[in-house]
Amino acid sequence: MRPVIPSGRRAALLFGTDLLLTPLAAGCSTSGDDGPLGRPVEAKGAVDSLLDGTIGAITPAVERRDGSYEAKELQDRFGRGNGKADLSKRVHLEERIIPAKAGVLLGQVETYWKGQGYAVGEEQTNARSRSVTAHRPDNAWVSVEVDSGGTAEIEAGVDGTKYPGELYPFKDPGAPEPLPNKTPAGRQDAPYWSH
Image (cartoon, rainbow, N blue to C red):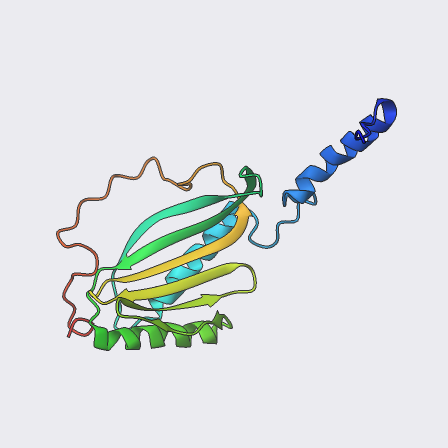
């Protein structure tokens, strides 16, 4: 039996309907409501706030080395960009955190996160690192990881914001290039954290 291929006006209606439904099936929203952090600028603000708050909760105070904002474009089921991205930024601490103090550092940030009303996950521990992650209801999250070599990394992000059009958004073209540090991140000796 041969398949029936619609023709004429009926074909236009059927294929026209398919074209209208395709963006919805691919996960694109036509409503324009992307939530409180749907625009990249708001997502960047949330990332900055999460990083600043988390680092500010660590005592004695630590120095930070900021990475770039990164927007990883999400794809639909056909492998095409769907207009959304996961925006994140990593920060490394300059101080070397000895294993005995890693629990102290994670405990401080967990206490801060709980005080902010974040949903805090279970601490993950293995031979290479210790880490913990917290989430907010608006798709923002933050994690802290301390590896066995003493390097601490804090990463924050927002899932599902609008794609800003490039992998590394929010560059400041007028900013000077950073001078190279004498010490790699996580290697600076600190009176409390390194002893």
